[in-house]
Image 1 (cartoon, one colour):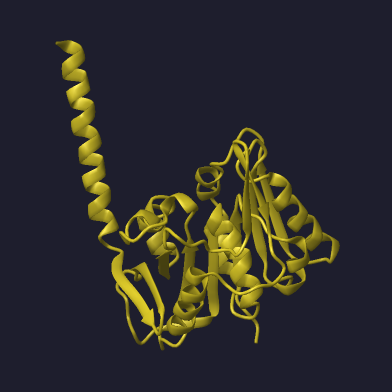
Image 2: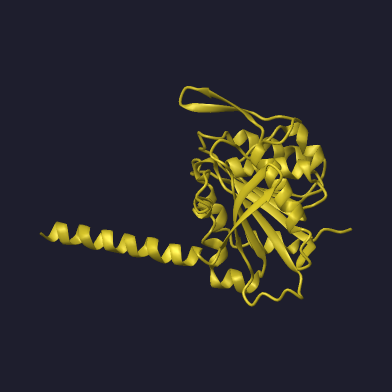
Length: 263
C-alpha cells in the first residue's frame, strides 16, 4: 500500500508539474504565418509591460527534429522555460519566437543517410531552402517590418536540427543577425565564409553519438583561423543533450544580447 501511495503521489506531482508548465507556456501566444504557399506555426512571447512605442530585440529559436509537427506546442519543450524565468524577462526584455518545423520537413537542406544506428549528415553548400526554412525566411522578413523591432538586435539560435538550421539561416541572411548560438548542430565548413561576420557561440557534447561533435569543431576552428569572433564550449560528459548545459550557462543571454549590428 505504501508503494501504491508513493506512486500515486508521484503521478499527481507529475501531472501538476505538466499543468503548471502548460499554464506558463500559455504566455507564448499561438500564431500562424501564411503567405502564398508558405505556412508556419509559431509561438511568440512578448516582453513584460510591452510598449509598442519602444523597440525590442528579437530572438528566433529553432527546435530539434523531435519537436517537429503541427501542434504549435512541442517546439517549446526545450528552451521554452528559459525565457519565462522572471530574471530573464526582467534583465533581457525581448521578443522570443519559437517557430515549428513541419513533420515532413527540416530546417536545413542537409542530406541524411541512415547508416545503422547513427545517421550520416551531408551538409550542403548551396541549394534551395526546405519548405519550412522558406517559410521561416518569410516569417523573419515579416517580423522585421514591425515598428517595435530593433533591427540592430536580431538573433537566432537552436539545437540539433535547429543548430543546423541556425547556420542555414545565417548563410541565407548573413546581414540580418547581430549574433547567434548553435547547440549540437553542424554545417558544411565551406559555408563559414558566408556568416563569418556574425558572432557565434557553439556548444556540443563530446560524447554525442547523434550529431558528430567534429562538425561544430570544424566550424569553430575555421572561424578562429580567419580571425572572427567565436566561442566554442564542449561538455566532456554530454551526449546529444548538450542543450540543458548550454541553457544553464550564466553568460549565454548576456553575451547574446550584448551584440548589436553595426550599420
